[in-house]
Amino acid sequence: MMLLIVPLYFGTFYLGPTFAMVQGLVEVRMRAIAAAVLLFVLNLIGLGLGPQIVGIVSDLLTPIFGIEALRYALMAVFLGNLWSAFHYYIAS
Image (cartoon, rainbow, N blue to C red):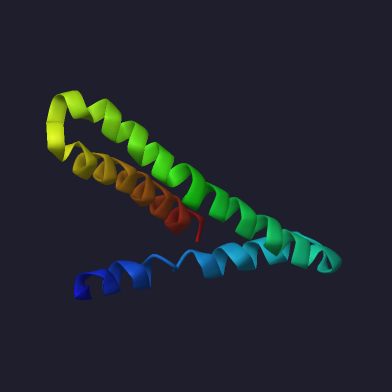
């Protein structure tokens, strides 16, 4: 459980700049709708597509890695997180 503290702490760092950017790009009267749409899209991708993509990658890797396919599927999806973190760094 203690090993999850660091990823959970750093895993939410993108939310502040993301909401600030969205709030800065829209008009004042549209900020609530923009925040709601952003939360909807984040949850749709994170809770909807995330497990689906991990499952598909795991199924594709099962003939190669067998029972360890889920481990490598999670690592492959994590590389997408590193890619997005790199782009957040470039944008800052």
